[in-house]
Length: 182
Image 1 (cartoon, one colour):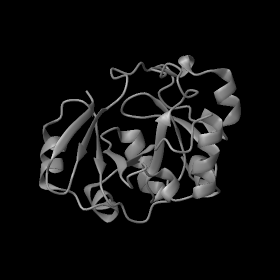
Image 2 (cartoon, one colour):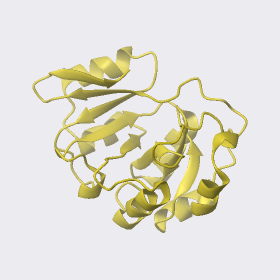
Image 3 (cartoon, rainbow, N blue to C red):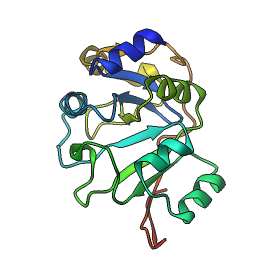
Image 4 (tube, rainbow, N blue to C red):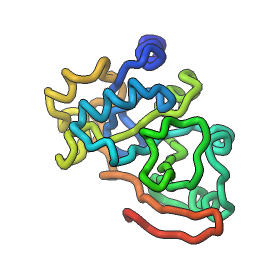
């Protein structure tokens, strides 16, 4: 785990298994690393990326969490990313045009350990070029993507994800809700 943490701390990018699909990740607070991911994915800069956190405390450090969000997190059977308004301490390049950010509180042990040791939120975007199919297992990732990141995690390479992505739900501070992806 230490070599992965060193890569992330030095602004590197990784391929890693998440609680859904394989992702490309970096320290979410490092703007150079975030921009590297946009370049790797050939993704338009105006498309936001989500981040992962390992604890309720870290989530609350980044955003004011509406009561409705806690209920959805607690009741959701599958991984759920919630889009929050007015995040704190994140580069504006990560945010959507309206200033919001999608954050998922992970349940996956590997991700939890990784984020805890890094002590920062982690960018999580599918390990593919923009518009291509999301990788359910490591062998689905294009060799070109593997070459472009700084490190590919060994963990769970044979595992096939049950989920092709998380549900994405936007919650406003007044508890209005909109399902963006089921």
